[in-house]
Length: 147
Image (cartoon, rainbow, N blue to C red):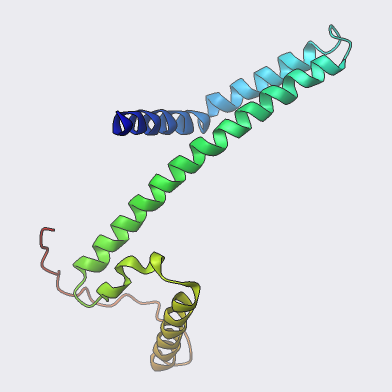
């Protein structure tokens, strides 16, 4: 039941996030605001009139935070898995980087410093301190293995 509920939530979140980014959603929001503004004189621009738009906006914002965060978490995880697969499939890559996001800030700093030194050395070797802008010949494709 829990997995089914989670799957339903993720499908709902994905649908809402996609729909909320559509131009029609923006048009709908503008229309709602225009209707609200036009009803102002009818309600004498009173506190109730102000409270309606404020409450609706706060509720929608509060709920959208969770839906957007859910979509961002899934996208981030998917990108991380794709990068992990590229690292795993590249023969000269360091497989120790597969779970780099789990390292401490200090460990990440050490790895970053190492790569900065490698980049500096590569710039020095390429001459005049300029980064290499020409593509290198493609290396042979690595053999793919099933997990």
